Length: 84
Image (cartoon, rainbow, N blue to C red; front, top):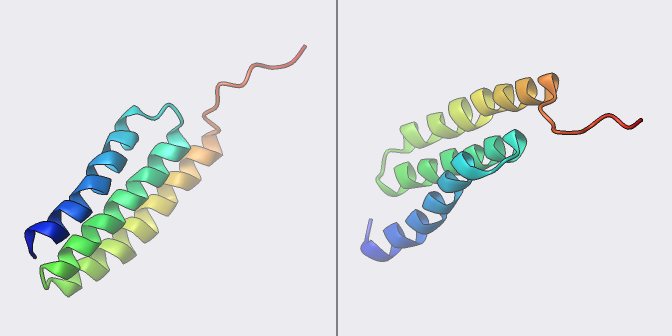
């Protein structure tokens, strides 16, 4: 992997990792984490670790993050005030 490819992939990875931490909505934080996991899989593909890249997409981005989103939406973490 050359320096240009690394920098092009590193910039959005850092931005979305910061969104995971600092975004007030847990749903958007989880979606940002899906993007981080997908960008990490692209890193694995560029490093010729194709099996790890596919595992990253299938296991982490696919199964684990869908489960996280399901739990977040199930417990309904919102700051909505009831209307009177």
